[in-house]
Image (cartoon, rainbow, N blue to C red; front, side, top):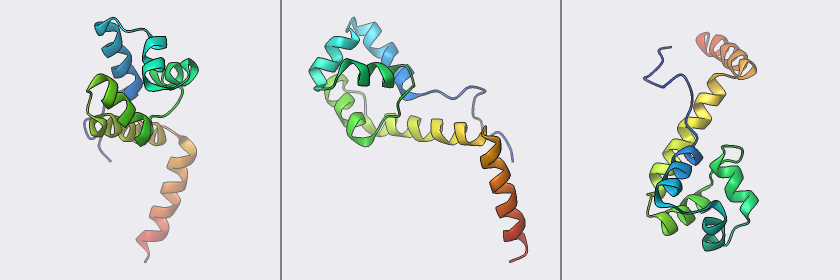
Amino acid sequence: MSNLGYGAFPTHPGEVLKDEIEVRGITQRQLADSMGLTYSVVNEILNGRRPLTAKTALMFEAVLDVPADSLMFLQTKYNLQIARKDASVMDMLKKIRKIAAVL
């Protein structure tokens, strides 16, 4: 299967959001307070240690005016790229493809 144009390193939506708040001069604590989330939750999202959910994407959209659907697209793309790099997932898919080929 081809690379499909994906970069070598997946981009977590938190990276984009982190850049956005830095440009705007907003601290993570200010952002967390305005969203009604704990600092640790926001910090984990911004540092790619926690996935973005539909709910948190909508919250970021409300506070930063960054479209939630774009953020969710990034999260989905990130999840797929991480899964493609997981040897156990790829082994499982290889077995499934072998079985499907004889159906």
